[in-house]
Image (spheres, rainbow, N blue to C red):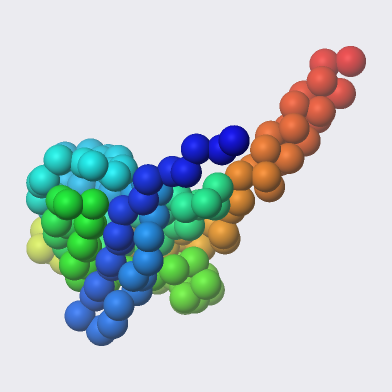
Length: 160
């Protein structure tokens, strides 16, 4: 008999809309002090979010989202994230992001203005997060396990 997992309510909002409003088993947040994992019955806390990847685990599946700053309020089995901006992998225009990354890299080599260099570094971090998240569609535990088994098979073939 399987034990039912406890869930928490997760709500992710940006100034434009609600990105997610469902239950989750676990959430991993990128905070300015490092990553924070949150499960049901987590103590009450608040956290300042950094640019990074938000990971949502639910029913043996994992979703990832690019989050660009904000705050998280945690307590009473609720996680409310108010993000400056957030994007699902399918919402990211990879060609545009790659062009932005290349433009930032060129401009950072050409400019001597410290303020412009700092702005470009922030934009570069944003593009790197977007590029990483864009490579992660919905991942189920069974597909992750079969991928791991394929990797092991490939390693054993290479050893022979």
